[in-house]
Amino acid sequence: MNNRYCVIMCGGVGSRFWPYSRSSKPKQFIDFLGTGKSLLQLTVERLDGIVPFENIIMLTNEQYAGLIEEQLPQISKNQILLEPARRNTAPCNAWAAYHIKALNPDAVIMVAPSDHLILNREAFRESVLRAYEFVESRDALLTFGVKPNRPETGYGYIQLGDRIDANFSRVKTFTEKPDLTLAKVFLESGEFYWNSGMFFWHVDSILRAVRELAPDIAARFEAGVALFGTPGEQDFINGMYASCANISIDYAIMEKAINVCVERVDFGWTDLGTWGALYDVSDKNEQGNVTQNCQALLVNSHDNVIAMPPDKLIVASGLDNYIIADAADALLIVPKNEEQKIRQYVNEVKLKYGEKYL
Image 1 (cartoon, rainbow, N blue to C red):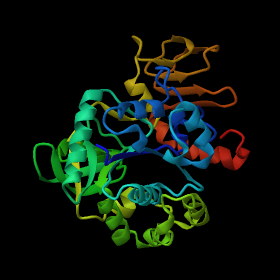
Image 2 (spheres, rainbow, N blue to C red):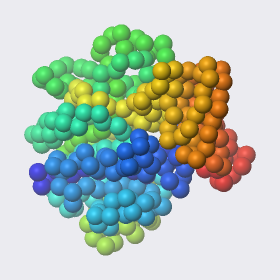
Image 3 (tube, rainbow, N blue to C red):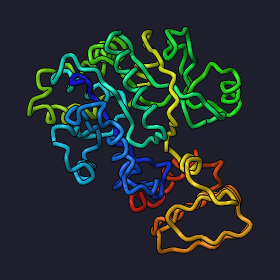
């Protein structure tokens, strides 16, 4: 167990949850579910008994160090890797691997987003333990695949290849966020699973893949390999990180590698990436409406998700399938079927009004 590490990616802005998720306090630091704990705190809590706490690494933007220390006061500063710039998930995963390799050459690593919802904690634990055992004995890059129950266009998909055993298969193809027609084909075929964005690998396996498939990124980290695990590591990262390619781990590594496998899992997974995803997992009234921590009088209104400050009342009539999110200085009103456009709207707000509302 001492060789098992978990890298929690918690540096994203979460713009699709705007206006509640802001650059100053993104969604992973917010209690969206009304549990009294943020999504990040719930992510760490799920790892109890699976990974030694001291082997949990936070990978985040430097502006969120204070939020992490506030929400996880037991964490030490050397467990937090601070990105000086946002360069997507390939550079940050490469950095985490080089860092952990310096600490433990025999490490096996789990990579977990900080904003997912897991409903069945025990099934999650069993799946994670199987995954660690799988990569401990194989040169493989492993991801969790979730059986789809709808033609979702906001997720990436994995096409299953040859079965390895009852739980694992080889990966045939990846497809990133298909349109609705293709998503329906994927669902009906039974060959495609959602890509959960959770990964497992031996530290040597991922570093080998980075060197072979993303040599430009590897070269930048190799230049300072002697500094990893030393006081000079952060200064080296600060000096070179912004020059790394801005590319995801999926595009840079997973879609190119020949040793990618998938564990088929079922533990009530949801990527809480959108208001619609929050709607799906929240309690609803008889009209199908979800109200998050607010007072609402809804007349002839159905299947809406409404988030307001707790001291604010909303009265609405004749409203169906809408997202209404009021964050005091910004109000969002969009049809639920346009939620994938929220990121575009946020970019337009930035162009017109600057950083004030972000």
